[in-house]
Image (cartoon, rainbow, N blue to C red):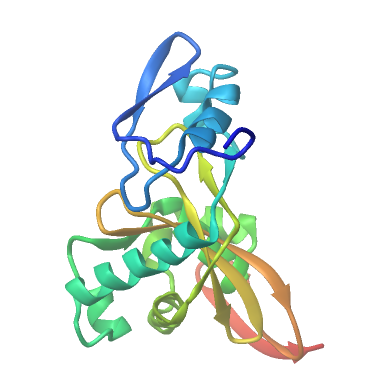
Length: 218
């Protein structure tokens, strides 16, 4: 019927035009429809591939209710394949199929463990090894438990889309942004809301070592 989006999914890979070339969209975790591809193509030519890959924000693609359900099913099925016990400690030990990007590690340190940008810089290239293991386990558990997905996916020049899983971390509502390029890759974390008493770890640096102080506030 005229005026309604086509219901036949587009077969991947899909050629997406960017400035100076075409790149392939290989997203197959949830089928995309022609109108969703048009949304990407409408804006994709405005930047080069490199500019999209480094952009702070990508192109937002509205997801249907069924597509959001499919994202949760894909997430759960991958977790079950990687570790049938769904144990966050065991999942973090998986060598292939689950992990955090460097950007995600930075965001966990600054947004969850509350290191300042200066403190993060002082840690140098070893910052990736500075996250508390308990923090990683709690983030992984919140992802395992998540049953809600953001209304919009995001395209940023990669072959796969980013999806936001709505999660709870202590008193905080957080969005864990993932893609399914190779299993589950956590791309970043966004703190949406904090309520009640927040336990905060504040770090100070004396030139040699970090000192952590914990306090609560409302």
